[in-house]
Image 1 (spheres, rainbow, N blue to C red):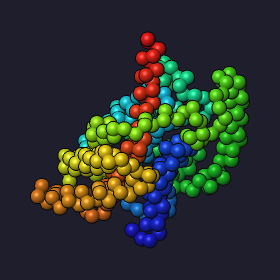
Image 2 (tube, one colour):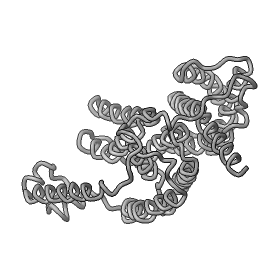
Image 3 (cartoon, helix red, strand yellow):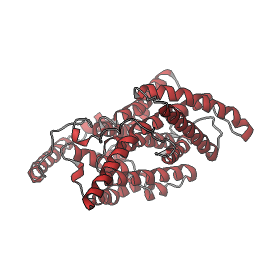
Image 4 (cartoon, rainbow, N blue to C red):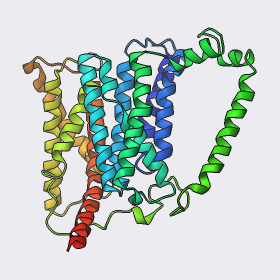
Length: 380
């Protein structure tokens, strides 16, 4: 890899790692940006580098899972509709299991059987939340939206990409514009000037369709905002008064182990010079997460709480690095081997996900407790 290839690769990867960190606060624009970058990065590599893209699919799937994991964690922070959250949770873990099986078995049909419905379901919910309270959504609305996305959007898309193995860019150039795949876009469009009036007609049709539909929509509950914190009505109930510390052993521990374990297996398939079994990877992650939970519980029991998410991330990263280093030293005894850089990558990835999860899980817990208390009061 020469210096120019390395710079392009580094910029794209840093963007794919950095943009998703904005999802908890600015959900809709951030996930759309992550989605567009996901769609464009291969074309960027092909156009501006000479990189070998044989392992692109594993790299791409791993980073897809990364930004979708942060999107899922953002639902803990932001989603006030409990049933919508639970539906999204099912869709997320259903896809995560499918991607894990695909990485282990290499059977492309698994990506059709386990479609990525969660991503568009997340976009649908966040788009609706720009103007309306999601608590107005009924179970029928939510199930209907998830089913529509699953059947009419994601199944055709997954078939197109993973079963038929069709490339949209190639199809547009060869079958619509009538040029070769290697033809630059500027030249391809200059030879097909009819495209521009067609695009104008399509844009006009969309504009008038929106104008026709817009007055028929329900009255908005608030002004437009992409900021998840712009609407106080969406905020969770206040934290309970200080008392017995929350038990990090119980709240979400098993979910964190499952979440990070599956993600680690997926990322483990793309790391170079790594010889660690999936069982070893999952066991190591479970040990580190359990130690994290113990440390957090121990600190909380003594009245110590993290002042900021950055402080928590830095402190837990240091603890996790020491634990991970100890596990790495034990790996040769179990016929395992991993590079130091891979260890650092996993430690930072693990710490980021666990820190975000621990920070935002209480938001969901408080909303759930309030909803259950309201339901109890109603029944009485």
